[in-house]
Length: 355
Ligand SMILES: NC(=O)c1ccc[n+]([C@@H]2O[C@H](COP(=O)([O-])OP(=O)(O)OC[C@H]3O[C@@H](n4cnc5c(N)ncnc54)[C@H](OP(=O)(O)O)[C@@H]3O)[C@@H](O)[C@H]2O)c1
Image (cartoon, rainbow, N blue to C red; front, side, top):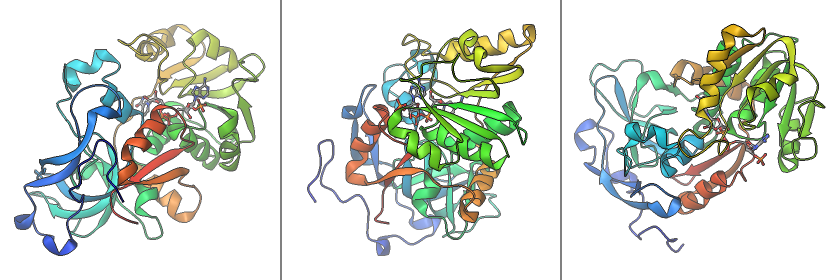
């Protein structure tokens, strides 16, 4: 296969026999997707990069699959610009993108217990688009039998966000009605399934192209937001969770029952480049004490324990991985572009090793 634009021709992976799974032979450099500045995928190049080491409380993981998510797009574009003081003003301080990964433990950092070299794990850590990533043990979980590396890699950010939004923020109960805005996306596809598992009746709002997926994940009803811009025609719900709509709080509250809860996960490209809609989340929290509805923002906490719950749902068949495409590493740029263009139904995964 020829190398695509933005790559060189050095093979991404060494032969297994070149390294043994001990700390002493862990390579000092590795192949990684390296970002040269903020922008589109033209800023990303496969190249040689310093290999991470596992510090105290971390494991070093040989990555097999990575799933880009909207956070990968935010880091690549440097939007919203208000977060650049934390990311790096002109170029990202962490030049290797990607957070959600699956792979095998290569080495254990000092003091790590409960994991062994060779364990199949999934989790989140900065710099996941690389041969090796160092991850905190609190942010990884063992992959159960029957769950593939690529399905596991799709869960650590999106599905964990969905679990926490439903359980900790919206506190969804069996029998409640839940409206998921952006039900065809990464977080939304997990929200639909986890709400159904919690015993809720789910309505999803998605583009027509993603309606079939949303229905297959358990939504009773799917609303095409272009045909039915709502919210007055959508009905009233105990819980509304927005991952995409981005409209004002007063508009979305029209879809709530009198004591309902509006949980804001996020929405892209709804404000200017500085805040990009982040202000809506903060306004929800500020307004909350003054209204009968409960208004709350969702702030995902990367958690190995919550990831283990999601992986258990996958292993038992209660949940589907909702992976739209498993792209080979040669198509990493194309996979990130597809996500940025919102073409992905559910999740997309890049396999760094042949599966
Ligand atoms: N608060 C947190 O801790 C947290 C954690 C993770 C993600 N987020 C945020 O949550 C948002 C969603 O993330 P994601 O990874 O799920 O993104 P994603 O995979 O790109 O999904 C977004 C989905 O929304 C759909 N969409 C766009 N406009 C819509 C509308 N008006 N109504 C309904 N659906 C619409 C898009 O597809 P169509 O255009 O085809 O409908 C797409 O499927 C992002 O803003 C992200 O930054 C926040």
